Image 1 (cartoon, helix red, strand yellow):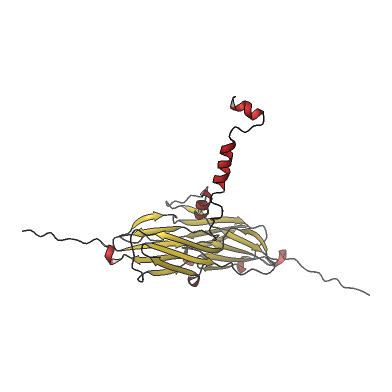
Image 2 (image 1 turned 90 degrees about the horizontal axis):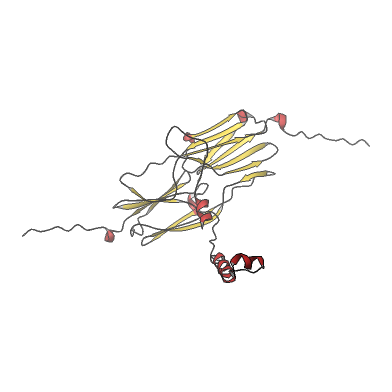
Length: 132
Length: 144
C-alpha cells in the first residue's frame, strides 16, 4: 500500500530552494537519443509555455516550470493529495548540442524537447569502395 | 526450552506465525488494479459545489471519461504511450502510461447532469454542483 502512495506523490527535489515558499518538484522525464539528436519528454502538469524556462549553459540543461494554480475563491480544501509548486530539473548533456536548433514544445502538460547534436559530433559514415 | 536454543537446534519457534505472515503477504494478491498509473486528486468544496482537480500530464480530453453517481465521481482514462522515435535509444523512462481509474467520494450528493469538466495544460478540473435536495434549508422562525 505504501508503494502506491509513493507512486502518486510527486518527488520533491532535495537541495534546490527558492526565495518564495513553494515546493520544488522533480518532473518525471523520458530521455531518448538517436544519432542526430537527444529527445526529452518531461511531465509538467499545470505549466504553461510562458512560465517555462529552458536554459542550456556549460552543457547543463536546466528546466524550470512554474505551476499555475489559483485556489478557487470561497472554497475550502477538503482533500489534498498533491501540492503545486515549481518543477525544476537539471541534466548534464555530455554531447555537444547545436544551441540554435533546440526545439521545445509544450502540450497537455508535457514538455517535448529536441536537442540536435552539432554536426561535428555526429557520426560520419565513410563509404568503402571496392576495387575489383 | 528457551527460544535461542530452539533456533540453534534449527527449529522455528513460530511455525504458526510464519504461515500467518505468508497468508497476510498474499492477502491482497489478485486484487491489483489494472491501471499502471495512479494520479493524485485535490478536492475543494463550499456550500454550493465541489471542485475536483487531478494532474494527468500527457493525456487528451477525448481519452478521459468522467461519471457521477450520487456522491461519487469516477475518473477513467488512458495515457497513450507517445509515438516512438525511430532508431532511438532510451536512456530514461520515468513517465508512466496506461489505463487509470479512480472513484472519489465527494462531500455531498451532486446534480447528475450539471457537472462541468475541463482539461488544461495536463490538469483536469471538474466542477460539481451540489444536489438541491441535500442543501441545508433555512427555516424561518415565526414569533407569536
